[in-house]
Length: 325
Image (cartoon, rainbow, N blue to C red):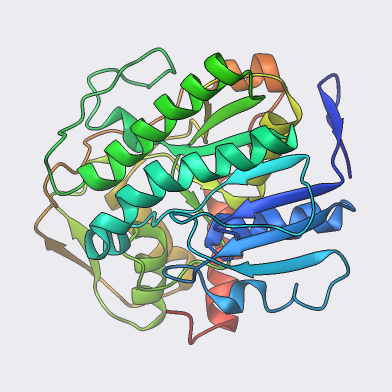
């Protein structure tokens, strides 16, 4: 696969391993890599990933599925030149249900993926998250900010798993010279999300299409920055093609409140739903917005799809897949 970017870096991938490849972001990555001509091995234990996400890939030339828990040692048949570590529960509903599994994937799973990349002399990319910033005191958040994270709160199993994964990736690169990078993803959304995964966009879309009240937490004034999946995938592959270790923020700097998001979903779906306010989760961040200066300067990347267009595409997918859960 020839991954090229205008005025930017370039690499030719032959075989990519995507851990968590049946998840939301992972499955879109598998598709993009296959479309560009790379062979892809998807590694997933389906604890949160869905077979439906990769059903259309199973018969494609170059695609291999390995059903395995990356927290345990796993093997792939062919030496990769790219390892994308995206295995992890990512929604609050999932990591609160699977707290120990989340910590294991972020620690042992990251170590096993790094070992595969090191012995294969492959480029390694860790999927980290904006959650490493916690409930931030800096706004917008740049990569030099260390964050404000509660290490024993209900969200800590995810936040700290990712923070540890970043530390492990950095140490591996320093000690063993592994070609490793880190991307911090911000609020990605789009087709293929589960309607009941607990995140705002799929929850609001599902509720609006069903004519149910949209459940806005707190007063709805907390902010989020939504990045459409196609833009996120482009940013990830740009980071993979670079030698940049990072971490580097991949997200959309356009910020909106949760209440504004709910009202926009109601408008775009033409729903008769109203808004119902519910209690705000513990340690829910008040603001979330990436500074993407580094991604713009080093990767020549920035998002292209605005929230309204991305939500239209997402709503259309949910209408077509009314049974998405």
